[in-house]
Length: 179
Length: 277
View 1 (tube, each protein chain N blue to C red):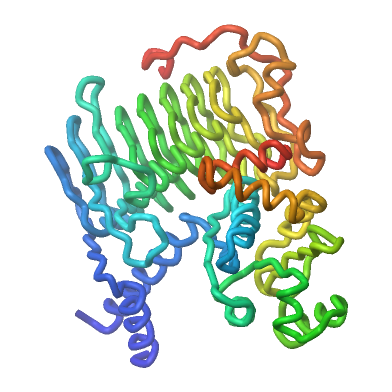
View 2 (view 1 turned 90 degrees about the vertical axis):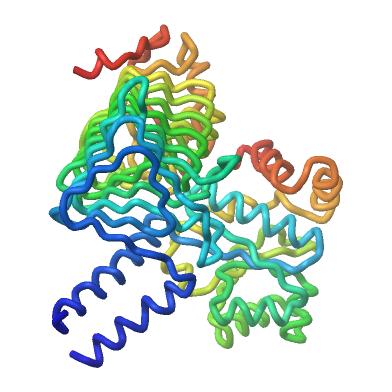
């Protein structure tokens, strides 16, 4: 077999792999901590994104905040959600605006509009390159604003015990007319 | 050149660490009886695959990249002719006792001159059939228990007398300059019957279909900017108000575009292969 023939055969295989990947769809990785509440929030984001955009979404679980932040910085996950405890543990700061800036400058991570601005603060954080690939995500995730708080999460935990994560999240998003 | 060659050789060895077999069809090949695919079958440009009625094509479930989607696939760059018959359909399924979605990847028709699918059943796949940059005629076929039953983009399609049921998405498409028609199909029992994801301008016509009893008969994609006309189908209701409840569009979210129905059918459409002449 000539070098030219081998070259084009290999090129074909490489292109085939790339095309195959594209047509299964791009995948977004949502990271979350191992607590049940964190898992619920991660699942809400994942389900909303996949239902509304058709994009495949996978969840990745982390045991501590620094591992999850590292995963976000390194590209292992595309999106995760931070709360005040997360911010304090990863930056040593209580001031959200300062922390937001550190995430941007030091980690290339953008805070999207907070889902909850109050005491049980929650904000989705997204990688800059993910944002370029999926520019519609901020608008989509904004739809969750005001819908998730600690009380709501506690209620969902009880629901999950009864009917499982998948159905609970689907019912929650349907009730809110988000899917 | 040698450096480039080495580089390219190295990439597939990483991506194929699970030793996915690639079987290439270069001439004309005819399948009948039972076929087990334990890797990827590629019908290369200029080649032709003919599948006779009654053939069972089994995809062995395996997932080397851990994406929870089976890696078995039939990839067509040449031509494919699936000649199932009414009592002898061609079945594309998973090699498993219990068939579930995503056990294999898809039959993918991509940059193909022509695909002809008749009396075929697609089940247990990520996408039963995907058509891209190709011309395809699909007749009398069933798409069931997949994530996407039938999916296409940038294609010229003619789909008639088919059934899409119990999939996550009965028909999912990114129109992107596709043209064609989908008619006399039963699109039922899916989570979403029809899902225009993005870039649709209404060049693919859906008419005389029964789009009923899906969780949503039609859902507009987040990135679908233009309103789309889905007139002349049966949606299970005799009034527009009832029909609109089965859509997830601007009526539910002001950021989405609208499903337009200038007229709709009040009776269930009678299907049959005679409708496809």
